[in-house]
Length: 358
Image 1 (tube, rainbow, N blue to C red):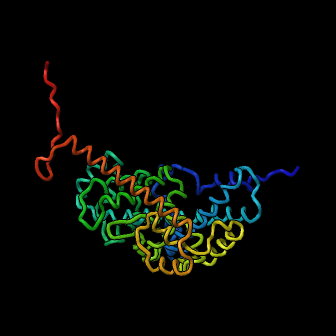
Image 2 (cartoon, one colour):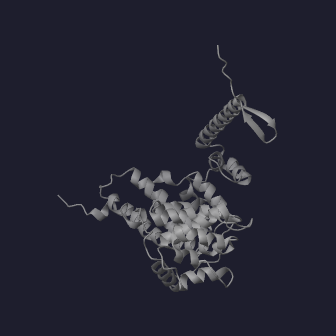
Image 3 (spheres, one colour):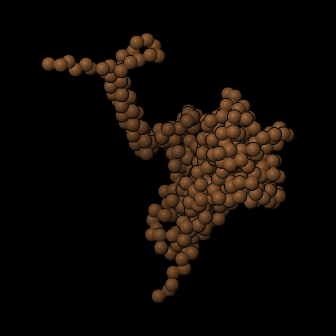
């Protein structure tokens, strides 16, 4: 009887760093700073955010399909093993880039804090004096504070540092176009990764969807190229579960699909035909909650293929969901009207039933 090599199983690969929940909050800022600097010195070109997102979503989809048909300790066939190994190897590198990017842009945005003196006083007992005073006397425009983190990081842990950033975005004073709660949501992803609530895999699943006050976060000219409007199309297709198909069939997303990724998707189509359909079904994309509308794509699809059974089912399900939400909203409004009285627009009082003594 042949012995099973643990490295040939899903269980082994699912225990790799990409999928682990690791608390990194105790790592000194200086080590993070040094690692960021070393990464920059590698001279790797800025990555396309669309291409990186496609790498994650397409490979993640393939691994999910493989995992659905294999037991954790079952030896994987050669092609499946190579696919799973590529996912956990390549995406680990992409998670490193995303982490450094989040640290950089959240740090840089903190320079817009309009109540810095008050914030520093409040942050000292919360996150330590070294972190609080780091934000003082930052010069050099947009790059000043980020450069300071690289050259003179605070004598503190990365957990203290990112939590201080997060605290500022939620509690400090900001002008309309900078910082604030939207940047707090961006920093939430960073904090959850640093503290181990998010694995690197979960961080990558989230980072492409993050937006600040003026759109997607990938517009800072650091480690990533400027995003294009296609990123919205990508996320809408991802919501419908059709990214592998889009990598091979959708002309707009194919422009951002690296050749190596197309190769993996061709292999996925060969080994798992259900993963890659003949075309992206735009009726399903819209039915499952697309942010944008795709009338031209739907018209072209209707002309060539008509309405697919899957699209009809998705539309019916979406209609039922909408009707349920409408009914729940109506019931909530009725319950509210039953228990509250409007004195004037914007002012309501709760109705009270007085129980009289017999």
